[in-house]
Image (cartoon, rainbow, N blue to C red):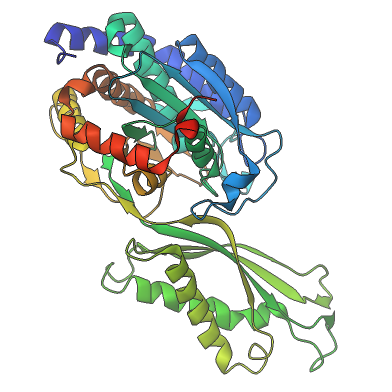
Length: 444
């Protein structure tokens, strides 16, 4: 496929601009569907309908029980019955293939008092669309829909190559939604994960591990001093040990007072059932970031060693050690090389589209791109709009950046096979064939 002429590229840009309002309305529909853990289906049906309208052959992809048993899978938080990812394909096959990956699940809203408006009532304000999931990452799916719609209008032949789209569940907590689509045969020679990157190119992610730490106390009436052990007080050495572990992980990685690249975050705390009773159990939900050079097992052992050291000289914890369990994400770090032909092709397209190359970042978080990179040896990049307040109150996405990103994405879809070297294509195919059986590569 030839590189786009100036007139064709201009026509695509105009089609993106003309179709933007429809894409924004689609995004508003997605935000209005509260796709928190366990309630993803209404939003998934919106994605299925929209991309079927755009010419994709769409399917619902259930998460089989055996997917969660794989070493790279996360630990499921709730059952999978009645829940699914959606996936589709369009275009002819036998040429270099491209897959677009987005996730439909969103983080909980937190305390509603901190929101300026209902988090599931999308609000446009000063060029931003505010609502839970607007940035992370329903805007990426809207950006993809806008790019495909523009090509359908201005340059239909740009959609002749094999193009796949997956909208997955549980990116935020396990990654099992993407893993299920891969095992169902939705693979490609290259992948674009539509995460919010401020139109920068994210080429890697750290390791991330979720763990539950349960600290035991001894319950009783609050007046039974000396006969009871408050689980919250017993947990304080453990909490201090986690803080110290974070400091060690980030030694030399951050300025004093700066953000942690490898955060050890206590995200949930549960314990107690009555103000006049001493709590017998305290449960801490922990997210541990760790260097890409470590395996998940090595990271878990580092945390266990830190907790064990905190308990060794504590009179209570020495004989009542905390129980530590894996509880969600088990994500190894990943990285894509800047000299990869796919990466260079995308950088070239962004540069021509916007007049300067994109920034390249290696964020302190993870994405489902890790599965494609680590399991397939397939280049997977993250690229998406500008966002704010992710996982916080008043989350939002800059609407102009959805248009800017769609311009890049539409042009890239249309011309990337011409810019990708044969060596890059063969590397991707060999990695795919080495990781999956023919039956698993077939469309279900």
